[in-house]
Length: 501
Ligand code: HEM
Image (tube, rainbow, N blue to C red):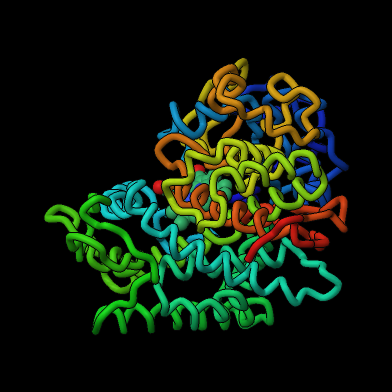
């Protein structure tokens, strides 16, 4: 995640056009033409994703974009090839750190949790958290996900004119699912506060992340005060739940799992059928002799990061999967036929994930066209050769699923929705990083399996209950902290022929 950057200090007076001239950098790196003095500042502000696509089209796989007035100028090095993305995220990951301005803003608002931390802090956190995300452990959340999906689908019976905005609905569903997983049944009360506060804070992070200069957070401006109030509320509700949890019994997620079969390593394991513990209970109980345990404020940081990373991302992926199917009735019928064949009338569970190859292809294709993390930012700590160019030390660097996922060399007719691109044979024929919505390397998404489980279960249940026809044929998007829709994504829904409750 973490888009954009604004921490450059170039003092040049050029337009940013032509070739780069950074003394430490490679003079050959092509630069995107911008306007005199401000470079591409306005283009990035008004349409950063379009600007990156144009940069790739005009200049190829490595492009330098400048933005901002002299003295406050940011320089952004864009790396678009799959091989380059692999180097930045995986093989040379130690040279590309989360020290960029954007990640600092996320850290200042959402804390030093698994997404934002680095070095020893990060390694300790990952060792403590990783066992909570084993496949079997995550599979235990399937029942809770199905219950949340059912309540959303049931509410559609009263949709005015039979129209639902799947963008709003999926945001609601994903928030409910992640709060249920994090807090168990306590999440119900917290979800409203989250729904109100998280967007205010992400908006604030975004505005500061893109701005060439920011006033200090503690100055009492209206923007600072609004964000501080939202943070207070959000932190407050998390702290309350954490304090209650540490002082007493924990509610379950409402799901059930055979813990012995699940082979979990966390606290509170019992043999046989047992309620599934929520993530907060497991985080609070996570400990090892070397790493100790999380204290209350560290627990809050983890919880906030999971809320941020696990909410809008899955919502976006589900929203676009539904929207694209609503635009493509043939693929929708095929997906629904798979659901009927696999499920009949029963509720989907974790074991069904492998039984939905076509639904999985649909989700992957939706994430190709609309990657929830469209751009991933880093700061380089050493000059690094990528392809034919050298990225200088101290540079703001981005890799961009949004652009690489549309590279015609790997994706013929890239704007066409075609789940066939993700058959096992087609996937095997492409470089690993031609598609990387979950990032990669040591900082790859820890929630990938959880997200796929949630998406497949939810999509299966929604497709079985309703047919979707797109009312809005195009949905405008912009790069927020994650990809977000900037208009409605309405679908007309109706019960499929032969539907049974
Ligand atoms: C479609 C859904 C999702 C997408 C596309 C997605 C994407 C990503 C990406 C691209 C990264 C890497 C960021 C970077 O390298 O700077 C990441 C990291 C992370 N994601 Fe996700 N994510 C999704 C769902 C989730 C969910 C559901 C959770 C939690 C339940 C989650 C938790 C995290 C965490 C904690 C990290 C940091 C991991 C680390 O650095 O060790 N994500 N995600």
